[in-house]
Length: 438
Picture (spheres, helix red, strand yellow):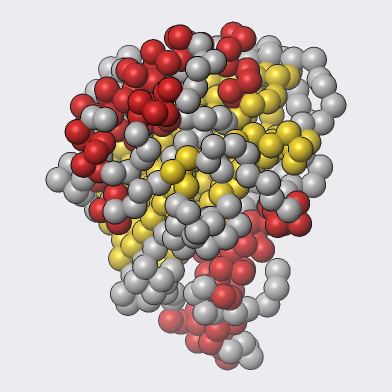
């Protein structure tokens, strides 16, 4: 076992893990070895690294996680509340695809939807390897991934039903890790809505380390939502890489209402002229939870536009980190980029580290950024209380209004209603400001 892994005691021994996969293609095994070497080279991220200055993983590395040996059987009643009616749905339990719980819907020409592990040997070996520039946890995923979702839209394919990718951690007594590998490809001119949900059934410690790659082809239109509903003992460290082609449109919303320590690194490259990326986020954190979003947006082509709006609502002793970097390459003239991070503190002991950044190497561009951290407006509270609302109701209403504009662009009504309900529930039961049901 490599010394760095032995020291961290974070994951199962690598060689026994490899030995237990005798039927796996040689190219995949080779990519796993390359990935583990990359991880050993980089080591577990620590606070002496600038990008990890505000996020401490020492609580994570005190655990010794196992991998589930086979799909875990669960009662459908336990997960049905996370299901999305009307969607094509793939369900994964502790890192394994569950065909019994999934409902991929009727076959449609131009749509390939299924388990990453099952699709991989057919035509996607090149995607198994961790990229040379992989970050440490991305490389760790490359070594230990077991399954994930594979979504491939052919050119001009239009999928009317949303595609729901549901990842469930059982959260049992034994700490389990799941290394999810997702691959989404939207061919030229295609259109789809994809939702990823990460949830816990039990209250036990678990570690979720997903890596996703998204390619949005020329003139394709992809809506992507990412929802975190894991328990307070969960560690969730995710990496996503998105690439946009000519005139492609990518609209995303990251909604976090759970997890004990959560971090998401999002790398988005606007590689095609005229491409547009709308990256929204809403994170809710109470107690001693820690939420960290790192966004790296690179404009590599001219006439492209990006919009980032991330908002945080924090209570108790929660801590949030927002680090957003917009990079405009020299060939990316006429770039239009705007980055905003706004935070609302419901407690004097909550903390936010916000660090928006711009790097511009092209002329004739329009780029702005901004960041705010504040509390509820006292005059607005006084006005609402003078109209008969009690203090909790007034705070609940103003807080929902703070987040409300992020929901306006959600084209799927059932999803918008679900997120509004999750916000209301979080405010009522975790932040302690109950209001009127939306």
